[in-house]
Image 1 (cartoon, rainbow, N blue to C red):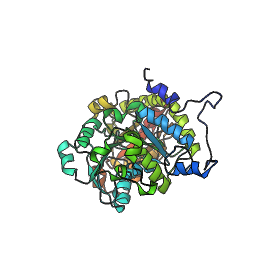
Image 2 (cartoon, protein in one colour):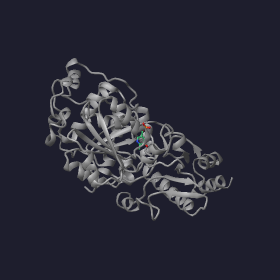
Image 3 (cartoon, rainbow, N blue to C red):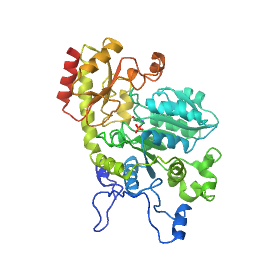
Image 4 (cartoon, helix red, strand yellow):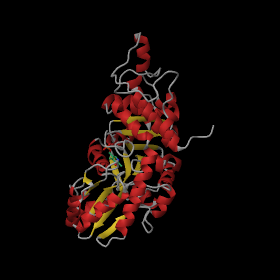
Length: 426
Ligand SMILES: *Cc1c(COP(=O)(O)O)cnc(C)c1O
């Protein structure tokens, strides 16, 4: 059978009701599930049978929505998490622990940077941050015998650098480590990192996938392609018996296609409990159904806003990857041929002070730490999300002191541009 297009998958994947069953994915708002005998329940605890017993680990609503995202990304298994932060924590911690090392792009989202650079260092995991534009030679210098993964974002938030997924995946595989890609800004509608060689894909579903600023959430998708057994010494958590599950070996029992997500669910969800609520998963799913339509409009609006800014003499610079002359134009053409995202960054002439004044004068666009939903919003990272950083640290993650992150919503492009115009003139 011919594979459905992404537009169809956003509506149909992950849930097929049987005769007389609910058409929409039902909300199974139950913490727990009932069994007739202790033997039956025991089998679930030993991972000998599959089924639900407690929603901290798995819930049918969440699983249906995860299955939909899994299909969108072209993976073999997926799980929802309570937030994008939990997704990235679990994706790394599932394969790296105390004494291990991870290479990450320095251009990543500020929250992920703190998670890695502060909190996960306290867990004993060492990180080397490299420029998202770094060469293979620079990666060669960064990689160590205890490196367990390389991590980057398809489109970096907020500096909007485009990650060369295919090249870095080839490098990672030549060194026996998986590539983990946070695909939040592109969404699977605009880029599917697994098709370019990424092994694990993560999302903050809080952004475009939910799309209506209603629920914080995350997702991890496994491609099922990374051969953990080939590098068994490096990934003992997947390839040797887990004493907390009666000595089962995840790769043996669940194959390459299921080992990573089963371990993350059975161990990390069990112990850290960062599960998504079924109600949040239901709302996320409503967002997924209109994702292709919305991404198209977000990208159209951003393109128009970027083109307007590009020709305005009060603007110092504009960064949007599909503007001709943009540093990432060619990479964007390769990885994001149908559009990138609705976020544009730019600097107003007059630097930091001018940025703050401009934002105060906006009427339609609101000032929010959030991005990537139906309402146009903006943020000055240097005075908000990144205010703890020095100007030098800001530069190293691709953020200048005057950078305004402008997230184009789904309103009329003319209204968004008129708002920018009046704020620049004020
Ligand atoms: C927002 C964001 C996160 C964190 O997600 P939360 O859902 O806020 O926890 C991670 N990565 C990227 C690229 C993001 O934009």
